[in-house]
Image 1 (cartoon, rainbow, N blue to C red):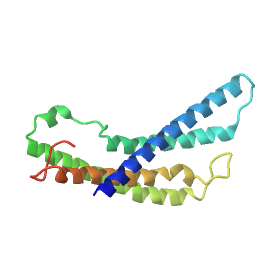
Image 2: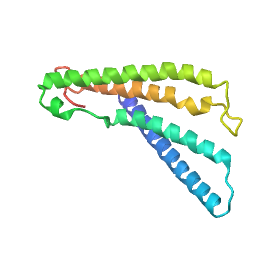
Image 3: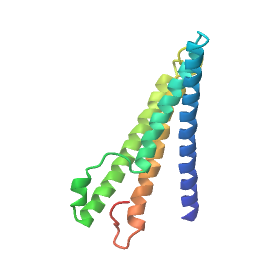
Image 4: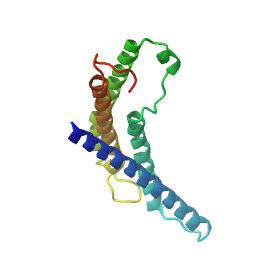
Length: 165
């Protein structure tokens, strides 16, 4: 169990680092584009494509991070007034729904990547699947994070549920 925990911590760290790199790269590219456009009166179109790709990847990774850290919108007013057992059931259902959405992202994302592999990104010879491969990656992360939360519900308590994780 400790090996799985270490692997999950490593995965969390890699996802965080990837998100930071994507955000930093977008910031640098956009800054460079603004300087070159307004100071030197020229612009590179290939960098606009990379900015778009990084933005999409950052946004989709943000979905997985949001599920991992429970940053999604919740109805706390109702949830907090429920008995502990019903809150535990809500937590379990939330985890199962996260896993379900992750499966949809994963399966349909793979289909979308296959379809988009027939075209290329504008101004480049890169396949459009490079832009959309983040969807099945996010789906896999959502499945992993949903399973981790679901398992924590049962492992951390003696009666099978422990309330909010």
